[in-house]
Image (cartoon, rainbow, N blue to C red):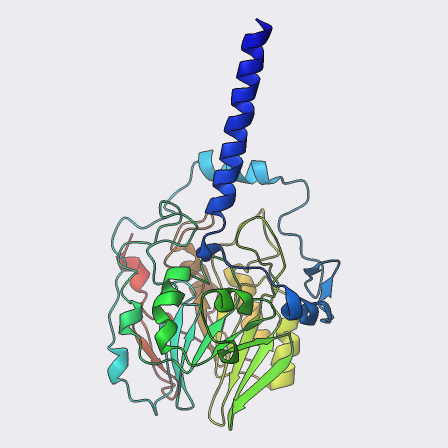
Length: 373
């Protein structure tokens, strides 16, 4: 009997060792990226936003409300009844030929969720592109809504600036980035995020990492401000080893702000005052939840942030492609439309692929989500 028990114990230990080895090897895949080390890590340690081995928000920002465990969140996500997380119909969209756009025209094109193509000041920019059909480590999780994956890397022209707000899967997509690699002239990101690009074969001189409140003037009359967001980072088990950011793009003609993923905070008012307002702000407006109220904005908070930023126009972000939170997929559009009534800014709600012309102050978009239930 004892010999049998010893054999069972030995077999169990071998099984656990093989499982651990398998997981370890799986996590070595390039898509998981590399954490900062060497001179990159030393630079990070000199940041005033890095403390006790990780980046910190400007104000205390718990990832979830006190008393809520990861296990309870997973239980609620998996087993609590939810209504209309994904549309039953295909999302309406159009496919603008980006190759033929007049480069002298300042335009913004939503590509779904938090991905954007821009032409600004004669430059072509791409923000947080995710062209995969899912935004997760595995293909059966976090699938894109039907109709939202209209664009591929092949549809993109040469990109002067690729901007990455942070390293979460729905903002930094390995297959998309590697497919775009030959077209990217410069990468702009927060401290530490450059480690991913270096591991993925990008030349060091193309990668520009910056701390909050840094102005990158890489060309005359074109400034990219790397700015705070209220969020966190990490692709798997580690947290906050790389910096999450927002951006302000400034040319002599226009100023555009991109929040990245961010909960509401006083940084919006500070940014609005320091840069004296924006022609367009693109703000986190979806994937909010009562259990994590500090790391994403509700539509009503996005409205307040737009006012803090002195926005002339607001474009909702982080919505319309992936279901990460437990709200109906179209609720953010409905709520922000209601909350934006009688505000000084214009609310812009284009379909995926529909160009926003920054010079056109009369441009209007229909409530397309009402046609997809």
